[in-house]
Amino acid sequence: MSTLATLLRRDLGLLLPGGRGGAGVLPLLFFLAVAMLYPFAVGPDAQLLARTGGGVIWVAALLAAILPLEKLVSDDLEAGVFDQLALRGVSEEWAMLSRLIAHWLAFAPLLLVATLPAAALLGLSGETTRTVLFGLLAGTPGLAAVGLAVAALTASLRGGAALAGLMVIPLAVPILIFGAGSLARPDTSGLLLAAAISLGLCALAPLAAGAAIKAARES
Image: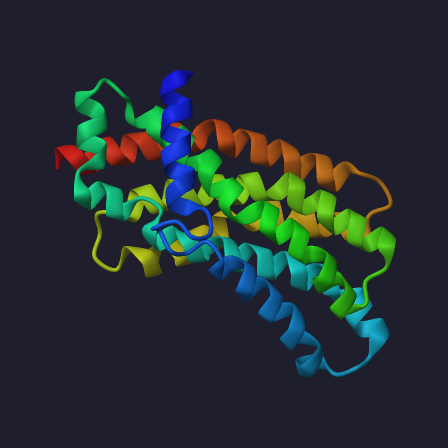
């Protein structure tokens, strides 16, 4: 656990806003920009905004989660960081587990906080805003897990950042369906399914990303 804690401190210093990764605030700015621009696109119809605003926030969160992927793994792979960790006996799976936790902490809490002004801009009710917040809390770990696995798979490829974006969107569709779909249901089944998918993805992503990094190192 001490190894994981050491890795997590390094990864948080890299990925949090102000870190040398440099992408910390971009998801937040993109998320708020979508919430501000959407009313200009569809007009001032308050009922339309309230009916569609929750889905817009979900789509904005999915696209915002893609922005940090370019520097999530590739820079360290190119710099030989994972080679050094392997020489010290740290497996790629442990390194990817740390990177997953740091990636989620770097973008998801900011998006959850930004959901409040975004919901106000879109005229969402208090009940809808709570459902969106719980949905994002359940779904963003899954989005982070999908993003990490795809970033590791494409880290050694030319044009990997653009390819990662195209790969993440279809893989994240189940989370989007159940997370955003919970807005139209009177019970919590959609939220629970989104949380279950997220847990499964978080369990599998470090293994898949670790295998991808190991293959990239040995190629």
